[in-house]
Length: 174
Image (cartoon, rainbow, N blue to C red; front, side, top):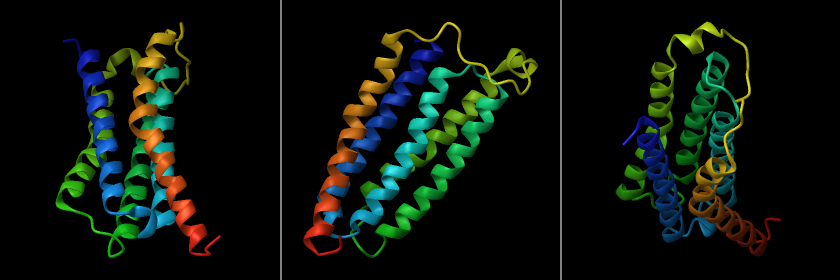
């Protein structure tokens, strides 16, 4: 398998971990426990990592993309900590969910490290110029990256957010 093939397999495993995490949230009744506060942190985390994935699809690898990636991965780690703090004491976070979080937390750092060391002299020689990929990746590449994310993470996130919003409304919280 090529380097790109291994990267894609890792990406799919990361998305599967995200799906498993949403299953854990559902089993622990997140909408009625940690509720909307935790679900909104999941929206933030998904937005940060979604931005990262889109940036890697659209931009040519180089120092600006690596810097943006580092900022997004760091922000994701902070949001992940806030997420865990929000859930703590409000709903059970099982050992299985904690291990799933390990994958979700580590995967962006690992990908950042691989990207940083895999850039090579050509990327460094471009300096700090932001460049779009030319030609742009084909539609099949966008679909291969975005469709699994939609099915495994975005749809469960929207279901969780909707359930948390409804639970809050039923409690009279707006």
